[in-house]
Figure 1 (spheres, rainbow, N blue to C red):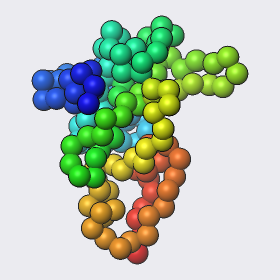
Figure 2: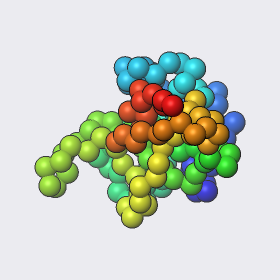
Figure 3: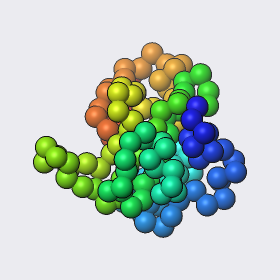
Figure 4: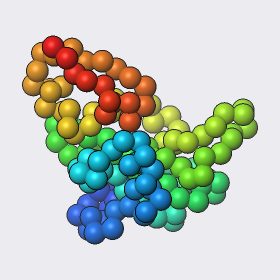
Length: 140
């Protein structure tokens, strides 16, 4: 795991994990304070953003980390962030979320659904975007 990601997910960073604007953004998405804490969403110090992404991040003033749980326990070595402010890239697309180039797609399972995914024979519905998974019900 990268040094920055390892630090952000460590208990050393548990005291003050989110700045108020990032917490408000997550709550606006419908996430509870308990869910936010359990998922280990973290504000990323500006000095660490470029190190997490591996490319120039000068357009980003702040960001929070969306950690990906590893089904075997712990966290995947995968960095995905929500950037503030969002910006328009060279092709005219609005950029809100970033991850390292060539890092590939990962499936995101909220911790609250992990047991149902791993230990049940219920159907799983795939949706696009991390936060959509919080609203998708697993049905039998």
